[in-house]
Length: 133
Image 1 (cartoon, rainbow, N blue to C red):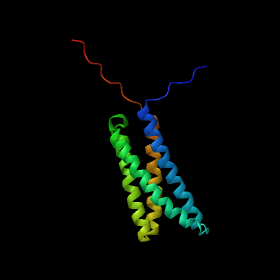
Image 2: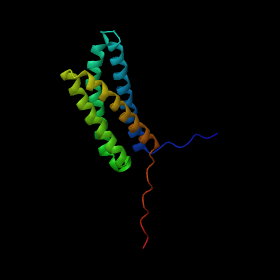
Image 3: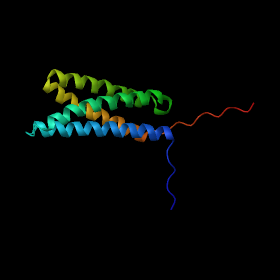
Image 4: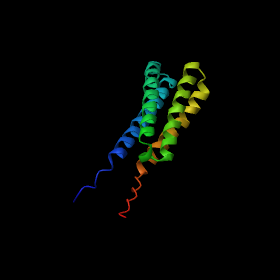
């Protein structure tokens, strides 16, 4: 039984970026749930994780922009949206606007999930063949 062929290297990079972004977002939700649930020590993890998450989201958006022809317009928009939302989320957390911070966190996790889903389903469109005339 033969294994399926590997996807194009650009798709491997994009799928990896989306996976790391979603992993950071899920980790942030977990740490937030832990300290909201009474485990105060996890607040520091959430605060450090916020910086890591913003950096990962920004790096991912840059990756999608650089590989925009391979990523497609929907994925590029989603990646940039995730980075912008992560920046706003960080600012809300720093300013102590807890209710909006939690609500936006849910929306951010949903947007990160959409990015991951769209990226994994995306296939490269075939390049048009040059005519031999």
